[in-house]
Image (cartoon, rainbow, N blue to C red; front, side, top):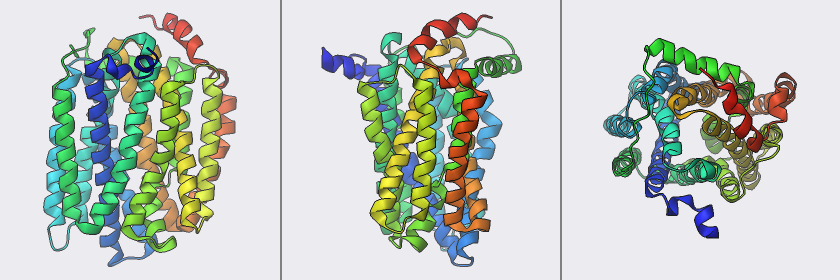
Length: 422
């Protein structure tokens, strides 16, 4: 009984298939992300300085964020209107198409950076529709009472993919860039197959209404729930400032001198720490003092970023990245729990879309911010700046959102739904 309680997918095969799809998609995305970063940096370094090449790597994030920003609110409304399983399958097809395009570009004698950025933008469109459909599908496949554990296992599946993906990307980069992109395409195809076999009814109970009106309802819902708004906005600004992902090719090649294999290892560092923390949260999910622990995790995230920035030893850098990932896993768990437990299913796609917009901004714009900061401060200075900013934000958000600071997940589940009327 204890095993079945801790492993909910043993009793819910559709949820198990979703976990498999999320894991495979995460491996594919990170394999491709590592390859994109290394390829763009390598191409740029043929003609440009370290600082300007770092800026171009950051442009990958901007290229993905712009279309995500443009489409994600529409994607949330779409996830509340149409079959979420079919939306995910369509997104997998688009991602396979984009990976195949990158294979063709990688086989060219001198790949065009503009073309690479254009395909990255297409991935941004796919991710815009994937995130709300995927996040809102999970609660349809398990009972509400085991949702916190299911969220923990979902986080673990994502972190597992984030551990394996960068390692695969780093190894394949050293062997063949086209092979790395081909591997991503195959993984996306396998994820699509897993989603295809989900048998549950995954079409939400659509409320009807005009698209713009429904999108506005989702925005209003997030704004009116200050705990949810505080949680997702804190995550946005913390990762926006403190994220070092875009700088890892620079640290691997020109600071730590460990090459593409070492670069893949660095990219796996945050996921290793995040995976271990996700495993703990899947068996012992946070219930009390959730908001407090989220604030602590963001401050720890900033501190770990600073340690990574000043380190010249690979093992210290890896430990710092693992600590960074563990702190981020706590933040992700609390945010997802607040959104998925509190929000009614007919609105879950739209609310998740707003959250996805914030997360996309923190990840993709964070890469762009890192590239710009590195252009003026250098890679080490940019990382230190981000870490200090994340720590400062913790104190600011604790004062701006006192309800978040004192939030308990078990209390929120009984009190928040009563405020959702209309």
